[in-house]
Image (cartoon, rainbow, N blue to C red):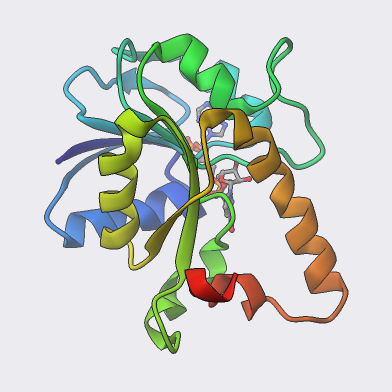
Length: 183
Ligand SMILES: NC(=O)c1ccc[n+]([C@@H]2O[C@H](COP(=O)([O-])OP(=O)(O)OC[C@H]3O[C@@H](n4cnc5c(N)ncnc54)[C@H](OP(=O)(O)O)[C@@H]3O)[C@@H](O)[C@H]2O)c1
């Protein structure tokens, strides 16, 4: 698959490495932007508050299947939207999914240590299912469906719950290493 990853930091950079190793062709886009018209799948991994600015510098978004991995830490989605993922869809008019935002990049290199395949929550359009499930599996996760795109705000807020669990002392592995039947 031809994948464009917008944001090449902890999340975008390391997921791009996974997908290249799985045989995909990956174009990495930083804040300078670029043309993604050839991509069959697009993954967004920029700071949540920078999503609108990032999209302004990217050409070829129309109709693309996009997986939005952003989180909003101390920020709100663009005005008029309840989630970044719904903003994404308004800019692409294509199949959209929210995913990879509930797994910490610091644990990417430990996925193989899990006693069973860790799950990767996603919500979004049915038309995005094949792409998001394949990208999840090729990064080492088992995809776990969390409903339609309207649930993206809930999934973005899930991070706050994860932080609370971690602060509560239940440990950072609690969600990362759970399998779907344990959730
Ligand atoms: N870190 C995690 O564990 C984790 C887990 C799940 C989700 N997330 C979310 O995933 C996103 C990325 O996190 P990260 O940890 O990978 O961040 P990061 O390491 O800081 O990388 C951010 C990337 O976004 C790019 N960027 C910054 N401002 C931009 C702009 N205005 N336009 C276009 N690109 C811009 C940067 O470009 P340059 O390369 O040009 O500087 C960089 O490549 C965030 O929304 C974060 O909340 C993070």
